[in-house]
Image (cartoon, rainbow, N blue to C red; front, side, top):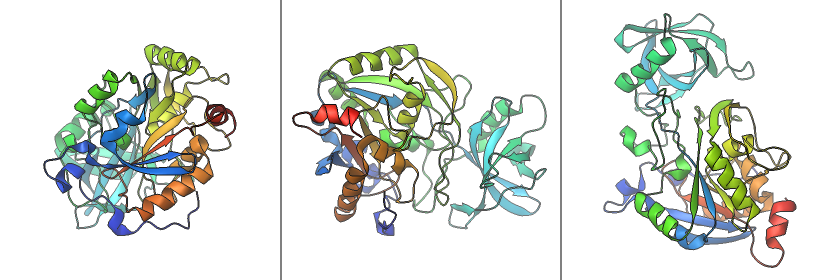
Length: 365
């Protein structure tokens, strides 16, 4: 994807569509549809008529956490974004400076040993950078037994959803939950909403099911994706259950199409796929970065939001649909004044139609 495209500030969705257009629901966003380089402009509510019986939507069930907490380092105010809970009880965190507008701006983390005072008398100590390349995320620990689980309680009591400067105001956590979100047994979840699924409503899901579209739930707890950094995703925890793996393989063996809802769903299901393209039940950590060079083994299509031209997610879109299709779609999205970010419009990438198109989609990318 070329970085020459510029997304004007006025194309940022500053509040959810149901607040921009009172009386309507989440599914009132627009839908850009790509079939190769052919682009059409639709409404998201038309999705059931764009899919067909036997198609399968892979959806992420990770709930969104209230992952931003106010704190202090010495006398200075900071905001801690809790990203990912490690297996050893530590959390990967990003420290940010409040900008006096209710949002935050990036700041350097560290040094090791830095102590952050949090509400309720909690203290958090930075131990080491998650990546020495950027130093943006640090592993941090709450001293004492059960610190990792105690942070879950801290987020429930004092946290608020992460938001960035392109949004207008704080929103309740319910605004950031998708219809597919399920509580995690250990209370963890995603630092930022798996937002491609946000436009789905219970009514729309019921219509899709009535038309023969199936759903395969997977889980990937996404970490913070700092608005300024545009870095490739860090390792994230995921799970593909046995029932979903069997369903995906059955659809691939038939005439249906496997369509991931969101880049997080792509990362999860592709992490569970072998070199033969078969998906197997798997859970743990994935460091997979889907690029055009690596390609995709499972998904035939993708429903996703609109990403900044510098975002690493665009490499995944190119892996699914090819660069020409992505470039054409983003040119049309700008021309059509589509809205960006988690409260914005969405983009559906489907296989090309016509003689031999399905074979080429699966084998020629």
